[in-house]
Amino acid sequence: MTAPNPAKRRFHGFPWPRTLRRKVILAFVLAAFLAVGNILVVQSLLRESDGLAAAVNVAGKMRMLSQRITLEALAGAAVPQRADHLRQYRDTFDQAYRALMSGGEAYGLRVPQVGLSQARQLAAVGHDWQIYQESVAVFSQAARSAAGADPEPLLAAGDQLLGSAEALLDALVRHARDVQRNALYNSYILFALNLFLLLLAYALVSRQVLRPIRRLVEQCRELASGNFAVRSRLRRRDELGSLGGALDESAAHIERLLAEVARERVSLQQAALVYEHTSEAMVVTDVDGYVQNINPAFTAVTGYRAAEIVGKRLNVLSSGRHDRDFYRDMWQSLAQSGRWSGDIWNRRKSGEEFVERLTINTSYNPDGSVNCRIGLFSDVTEKRRREALIWRQAHYDHLTQLPNRQMFHASLQRCIEDAHNSGPYFALMFLDLDLFKEVNDTFGHDEGDELLRLVSRRLTGCIRDSDLAARLGGDEFTLIIQRLNHPDDVRPICRKVLDAIAQPYTLSGNTVHISASVGVAFHPRDGGDAATLLKRADLAMYAAKQKGRNRYCLFSPDMLQAAPSHGD
Image (cartoon, rainbow, N blue to C red; front, side):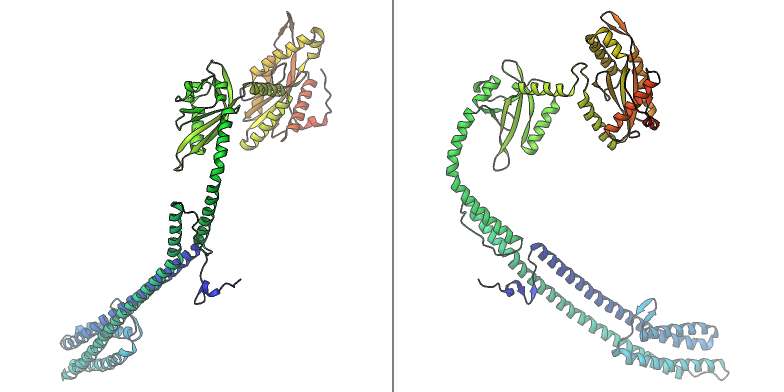
């Protein structure tokens, strides 16, 4: 095998990224650097241009100021009060000169230090400015004396200063023109560099992206025309290479599928036989639920023949037991996932209602639209009845029809879990009938059973729909009282229960009086698990019996010290 050539993956020693994402990031970074470079170059040119413009402006003002100082000096000879103006002009000229010499601010402008090419002219201005100031001083002193002053030296010094200022201004203007010309050349160079980089970027994009994409497009066109033998054979490690490999694999897979189509025809014939002879009812509808086809098992279950049901909607089977929300949820599931499964009550042609286990699947067209819906169902009426009977026998007391011990424990555990999430109190009431054994022994077990049924109905009448009454066995009952804001809220319920139980009972013409002892434990105050709550409610009930029966007690920690022994 030939070793891979590293030069193929590198350009002048630069390791190019392997994924398109990294290539895009690299292109973005390069473009950002190019944009920042352009901005920095333009800013540099603008700063240099602004500085030169300020220097030229200040030099021009110095030229004008030199003339103004001469006029002020001549006028000051006749009007001494104008000496202050003269000093102010001299100070302004000095400030402008220092700004040009060392950089600074003059006339409200930020002035850079003049370059070496203008330093000679600026030095000449400084030299002539010193001579001119001496001439002004001599002229001003002579003007104040009686002999009078000769203006010729002052005028000559002013002309000399004006000439040097003009020379400085001309030098600055020439330098400004040179800078502008250089800026224009730099702009051309920058434009050429940007154009070169854009051409380079285009070449890289064409090589790394456009060319592979063209190959993939050509392959897709061949695949669309039915030529599944074509391969892109892109040997790349980026996303386009992965796409090319996926297309190659797809083309090979389609070739294998086409080879299997002939074999599938036999399977379709076998499927048709299954459709005709299966014991499970099958129905095919369009997207709106109109029946297109049924199998013989459909007729066996519903009583409808094909001629009676094809072309009609399946709602002819509706029993009327399900509301609009049920069917809305069904159609919503079909629209979202194309599938629905569940039990549904329907009506046979004879009018008899039955429960069917229905599964609906959707067949789609290549464009994604619904081709048809396929329903498979079987009659599970007897099965559901048996299941319901078995469940009720396992969870309800056969005598009182109250939840039994098993269902009580499941409900108590569920209440504990709900209380952990929502937070409100709930109470567990443990109730034991007083004197029930005497009634059972005196009147017999049948009367005792009737008494238990009456007690269960009275207990159910004392609580809300959200609460639960259960029979644990014998004459022991429990109540779960939910959503209590405070433990004291259970006291009225306890009194109501005791009053209801204590009312007389009529058994075979005999009036019987019994009472109850009730113990109450709270979650989570008295226990966080079912076993602890039940034990402590039992202790509280025992305490109620010890206090004379026909009363209730709330659990308190001191009850743990007593050893309970049950009995009437």
